[in-house]
Image 1 (cartoon, rainbow, N blue to C red):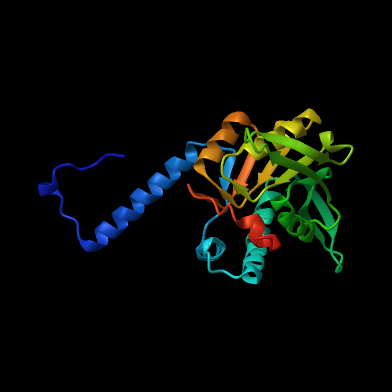
Image 2 (cartoon, rainbow, N blue to C red):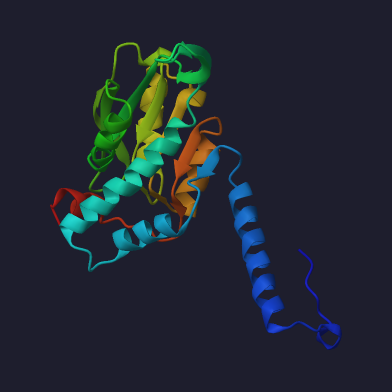
Length: 239
């Protein structure tokens, strides 16, 4: 991006300044996303999404409102995550006897939530995929070393053959997710078959994850240097 240094030859009106500012912000936003590679994807932003993000970050939001609006954002993220799954073409017959060329999910998908905050996203996935199987991983941080360690893991027996939607709403450092993905890989899940569904992610965590797992798809609603780490406690009412 070139900067104009000769101010004497620069004649810009108020409207031009506003448009120039928008163009610069758009360019900076595009550059920042490209830094993380093609497998980091952002939920398409609009005023509704921004409002949901604002409510969830507001310390004055009540617990009941927090859960209600969190579920709305979770549903949007889950829906977009499902868009990353493979579809196959199909032809069906309508009630009037007409033929319709459409799409259907390919078989072999499952969800895995990282306990506990990831469990907040399970219902959103079930609302979209009624009979989907969901596994769990519990990762805890050592009190002294702060190193993440796996305490519990339960998956479908054939998880190695499935596409996996890994659910974890808040990522500050990425350590918990990195540990969880390593466990999935130990169970022979291919890195490219994992889709991470996330609500809020810091640039630090995003960079750590894409560098460690460049083939994994990551979908988040927002990249911001401050993550709402109170999410799990507020959602489950343990704050």
